[in-house]
Image (tube, rainbow, N blue to C red):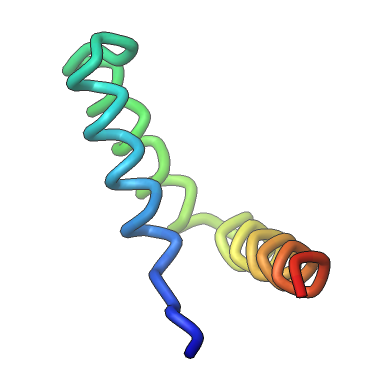
Amino acid sequence: MAVTVSLAVLLGILTVVLHRVGYLRLWPSLTVAAFGFTLASTGAGPAINQLLTNLVTALSNAAS
């Protein structure tokens, strides 16, 4: 049985964990999140999305 989890959910969990253990502070993490939303609305958004899709596909194929 395959379990699929959104990359956004995984990155969100990682951000919360890093914030809780003290590696991330509140304002820098909010700044990075705002930058991500801004970057996604530019022309680079689809290219970044395709890059991440290809990376996840390659990792998935390597694991199987």
